[in-house]
Every structure is written in structure tokens, then in C-alpha cells.
Length: 248
Image (cartoon, rainbow, N blue to C red):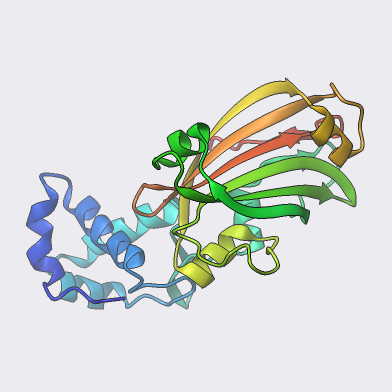
């Protein structure tokens, strides 16, 4: 990916009248968007970053603290600060909220039932901010916990962002693959929850009668630039599981 020719210091005044640490945070996030800082990469020291950007070390520390709170970077005692990776532990903590009523949370296994490229429907286009008919990738899969199918899931992706993604095996850890294969980091997600009754297709996939009550999780995943990269509809059985959200 092409490097910018102008300096970060020259760009900073264009970011507006915001607290300086937030402007520095935005600079650092932009480096991740551009692929200059990649998942797992160790960042320069706070002293070096402060000298490079032309701010105090305290401002850099505050910017990195904000990014750590957003789980964009990870601080490791005695080792430094690293760009966060979408490993299973992080996804389980940040994005997968279905946990058993009894026992420890676990990362689900996945079985892909279909993966196709097709024109975006009106709903796809509205959710992903695309023009109707734009090619999208549509993945249907079943996710299991402890060997029990509990989630029937539809994932819709802009085909232009993920060329060739459905041409081979679909990985269980989608967000990890987005980052390592395409340089696209899912920074955050917006979710809506609703009680629904399973239709015949989803019920059959989960091995329960049609009309069984389920929790619908409607998620829009956003990249570092704030634009949609995935629309996901998860129909979840909750007889032995619940949605857990830590608001601290």
C-alpha cells in the first residue's frame, strides 16, 4: 500500500479543533487503515512516536490508551504495544456474546452450508451502504457450541472488499481472515436484538421444530474507517445459552 508523502505533523491541523490526543489517535488509526501498521506488529516506543509526531510522550500515551480501550492495540507488560489481532480469544471477548448458562464461554465451531456471489438485495444494499445489485458474498453457516448446533447464521460481505473469499474453504474465524488476508480490521460492531420464531430452513439446520423461539442478532461490522464491511444475521437458540454483555 502506498505511503503518504506528507508528514503526520503537517496533517494534524486539518483534523479540526479536537483534543490533541484524539487527533494523534486518529493519525495512528489511519496508519492501520493504510496498512502501515498491521495486526500483530509492535509499535515504536512512546518516546519515538512523540518525537516523530511532535507532541509530548504523555499525549502519545493517552492516544494509545484510547486505542487500547477500543481494543485496537494491546499493551504487553515489558514488551510494548502491539496492533491487536483478531484471534479467537479477542473475538470471544469482544464480538461473540452467546455463552452457556452453565460452564465457561467457548469459541464456536462452524459448518458452512453455502457460499455464493450474487447481486445485493435492497436490504443488503441498505445495510452495507451499497447500490442495489452490487455484487455481494452470501455465506450461510451453522455454528455449534460443545458439539450442539445453536446458531444459524447468514453473513453478507461486499464482494469488492473480499475478492476470492468464497472460492476456497471458509475459515471459522472470519474477522481474523479479513485482517490477515485483506488488511481489513473490524474495529467495532452495531447490534440489534430481537425475539423471533425459526422458519423451516433454520429450524432444520439446528435440529429443532419450525417455530422454535430464537434470539436474532442483527450485526453490522465496521472497519477502522467507520464503513460497513459485514452484515450478519444470527438466529440463536437460547434454551441453554444466553447473550452476555459486559457494560463496564
